[in-house]
Length: 272
Ligand code: BTN
Image (cartoon, rainbow, N blue to C red; front, top):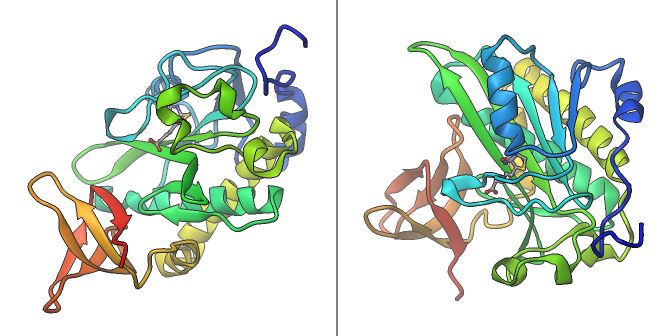
């Protein structure tokens, strides 16, 4: 243990995880990898080869962890959670953002159950605490013309990541559960809880409909009703954040009452 980087704990316990998840739909098959390029890439290939819904890929470290918008996800070994799940939803391609929002609810609930604070969701799927990023989700889907063949939901959570192990460039905007609570997190227990919550939230989406998921998502969305600025490829827009519509798009009411649907872009509060 002494030669490990600060914050590193022992390896994850895949057998304990399998045992815990035996009765659920998710996690019946878990690929546990000491190292991979990206768990999303591994899971995507598995899905192309016929991998079943609920298969999980977890790596101790990623050499090419992928973030949204082509960014890199910093993935040092034995500290955090890097995980991807294969889903095969019966949804129209346009509705796949609903999966990301349901996953964000599951992730926020898991964080909340491991800490004494409520995280917030930054649209569409960043998990923030004290305005710093604790976790992120990268969903990648494969569709034909009319249906979704599969969706890979990739989740990265900073668990026992100390500030001194973070690259300089992310220190200002990233946080970890260890930094927030000063208590080491049992990564196997966190992964187990997260997978069970994903299973439930995904089931709720199918059984209770998107309105139910959207309501829970909005309960973590701190910017609801606030003035925001959205960076769009052509030019930014400003307005009041109203919530999400049935496609998972963010609804922003501009001055004058025009409602804009935002499907991609960075959203930030406008300080009064
Ligand atoms: C984001 O930019 O907020 C999304 C980050 C997603 C990172 C996770 S780590 C596990 C999975 N594998 C990847 O390569 N990326 C996702």
